[in-house]
Image (cartoon, rainbow, N blue to C red):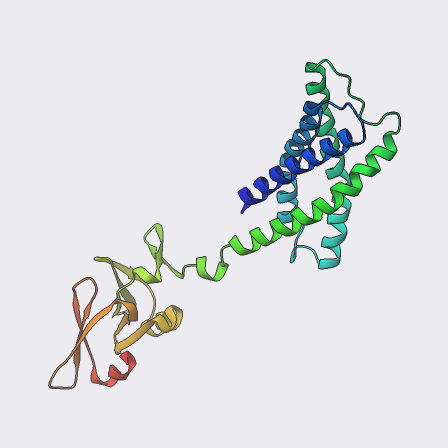
Length: 251
């Protein structure tokens, strides 16, 4: 999307340059074609630098960090130094290119303030158009924090603290004052009650026995026994037994 904006700006600059050259020649001016090209190219490259600044400002000056009125006011204020940056870079590039071509360049022709205001009137709308486009890009490509936040269980193992993602836990079994967490073929001992852990793990886990929890997504097969109890096969190939009292939890 950023590439499309840059290409569009380059095409617009080229079209403006050709139109300006045709208008000046039509008015009888003996303007040199390469100077028109330098003017448009210098403005384009100056805007590339300004785009980086605008992109950063859009990321900083936005809700909820600031209210909408404050955001609008701050961006309006930012148009002034941004326009001065664009003008300064543009003039510097033009003076260098004109000097190489043996031509004098006079930005203001003795009317500096008028020329700055003239450029600002063009730069301010461009700033807001780019800011709106960049805000849209940043908003649509921003990751959803609710999706990127992986539920994690923190357990203490001696002097180590282990962060175990819920999605890696296959089953949980009570073991006295502890619970055994079976995850990827490894068993972690965690000091907690099964009831407390059931509440912490949430609905992604189901109780199949008074001393046993399973992660729902880990279940691959359920086999009912004549007694009414059942055997569950998990994705790691292991099997564990469930009580008929908790059979409905797997529906």
